[in-house]
Length: 293
Ligand code: NAD
Image 1 (cartoon, rainbow, N blue to C red):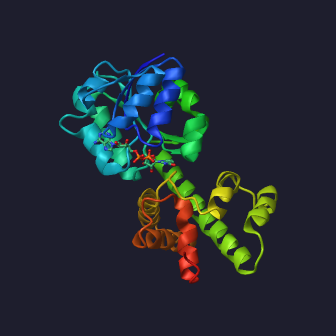
Image 2: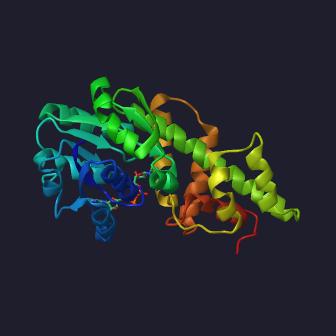
Image 3: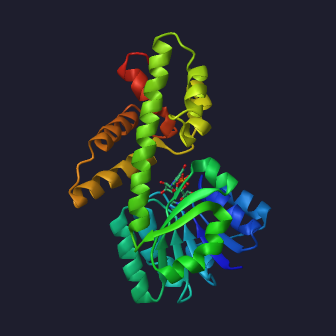
């Protein structure tokens, strides 16, 4: 069992920290949304007043933050993780950020005596609450092996996909598939409803056939009911589609469908849905068709 400093107790980080406490780890949390401390304390974790305090005696430091500026500030900043964690500590960054930031953090960490893994996750809020996330890990073999008890506590599928940054590349691929699936489910709902067919019943059938997916399993009822509380915010998916398009440009590959999905998600943000769940892509498709509420 490890002493863990956990930074970023949001929609994902909060349940993940609780799973680690329940697995027997000693978890000290630090976050900006201090209302999250109630749950961590109730579950038996500790809370800290600063990053320095959270990581002071940590063997493992975990970050679960929105994007690369936050991760870079928290990890590399003057009052950050690398300024205060004990030498040799292992940083597991579960955030979704651009691969080049993960690589730069790992290189800076290595020079300062820290081990680093990029370990973005998939499975959404439900996956985090249930401790069944899919985790795509970039970094060294020995560090992946050392992190296995952590991955076991929060995830079901965890795979070492390559060197530093590779986890983020796989996560970018994940996000284009998820975004594209939501866009098509939204179109399916609009089509069925426009022709007077019960979309709820229709999607029940789709979920059991070749069109079935985890998204249909988890989200079809809330989408048909137009319930869009996050979940995973459109703003964050917009950030992820930026990572996809930068990666595609860098790799000199054309991803036309991803480009279209990125535009639909950008439209959702422009239409004021940034803080809604990404299933609110349905509203974008409805608006395109003059069928919005
Ligand atoms: P969130 O906004 O709910 O949580 C982010 C947390 O970071 C907040 O608790 C905030 O207080 C904290 N934070 C921000 N800056 C900080 C700082 N300087 N110091 C300390 N804490 C700070 O976001 P989330 O939905 O939990 O997502 C976190 C990451 O996981 C993102 O990269 C996201 O893309 C990824 N992700 C989210 C989901 C999902 O379904 N929500 C699924 C997979 C991956």
